[in-house]
Image 1: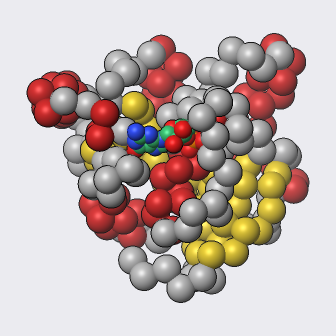
Image 2: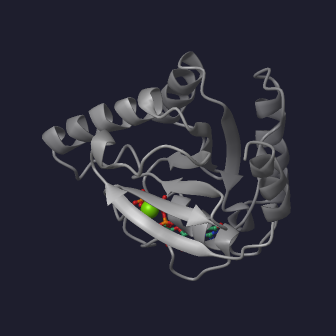
Length: 190
Ligand SMILES: Nc1nc2c(ncn2[C@@H]2O[C@H](COP(=O)(O)OP(=O)(O)OP(=O)(O)O)[C@@H](O)[C@H]2O)c(=O)[nH]1
Ligand SMILES: [Mg+2]
């Protein structure tokens, strides 16, 4: 995909603050610190379109980017960040639910998991919940640069058992491995 333009649209904390629906949209979800914002920057070949941090909890609102004037990429805050107050986590869960259920232009959710860290209950719950609401899920195992070849092979073997139509995409933002594969999956939705 040739990136001709990247426009940061806005940060929203409520469905009514989101940009008017129109263009197809792909959102990035996963645990805090898994690398959602880094992946968006890497896809867009921009250093800092989305804010990245080594401390979890960096992204706190839903951030919308308009690409080539034709589609949106959406950076979601991570889930499972323990340092947030209960109230804040609750508010966030309600908003996320409204966004996923109510956003008619949402074409797919890229669900990220760290390849070296086995999925935790919140990852499984998220995937089931997205499936339940009929949302297309693109499974991505990231940070492959940190994993050994046999770990990658093992994770892929587990994943093919879950009956998904397509296998997951394994990638590394650090090395660029797997990025083309992810782009071609994204393009099938936009
Ligand atoms: N080794 C390695 N590190 C990565 C990779 N992708 C992201 N990181 C690092 O992971 C950390 C978290 O990255 P972010 O992109 O801020 O993570 P996030 O999922 O957006 O986090 P929240 O906004 O807190 O939900 C940063 O230190 C990144 O440099 C990768 O492919 N390989
Ligand atoms: Mg982030």
